[in-house]
Length: 232
Ligand code: C5P
Image (cartoon, rainbow, N blue to C red; front, side, top):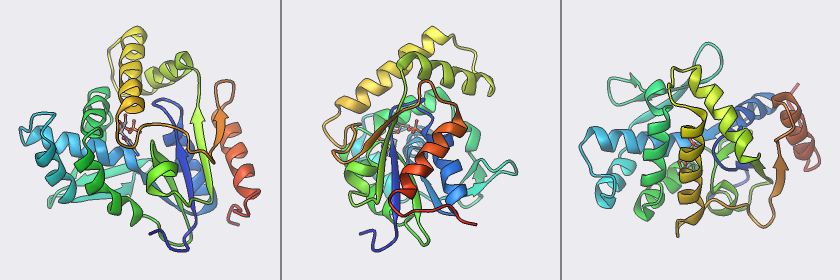
């Protein structure tokens, strides 16, 4: 269980800005951060390197159970992901759209989700945790002090994602990416285990017309109304 450590759950579809918003909110609060999507991306990457077929449930569950991964920070504050005994830097490898698709496939395997459940809960350490994902408020941290379901129109999400990936060398078109995002969201929302959905007690934030700073301020204001205040 999460004990007395307060958790702020931020769920939502791909390209809603959850990653950036969660990191900035965690920074402002001085809280830990859980990027749960990275765990699924890493399982998919490590599984594919081991030659596992995408639907190999037992094989991927094994990968998830024994995942040797460490999260750190780059000099610009963004996340760094180190894997294995040699601490291989796999940050860029897990951020591709292909890795996102692979993650979405292994994330539909119930044994993989079960294997990652406690690992995710272990991120809840004082003074608090901002947890970013698809099922943070519904399954992993049902007693979170605040649950946000962050969304944006599908056009805006594809546009944001395209900009983000282009900066990292993605060569596909906006139309290709829109299709891929729609496919990923449909799989995430329609899988039988832990589908992407807002918890009943989540507050829905539509960020379509908002910039990053405005969303961060809005989330912090909502957190403040639950007694969670920025540090300093
Ligand atoms: O958030 P991100 O795009 O990194 O997530 C990659 C994929 O991992 C998602 O499309 C989803 O299938 C899966 N995921 C999940 N549950 C989470 C976080 C991510 O199923 N809590």
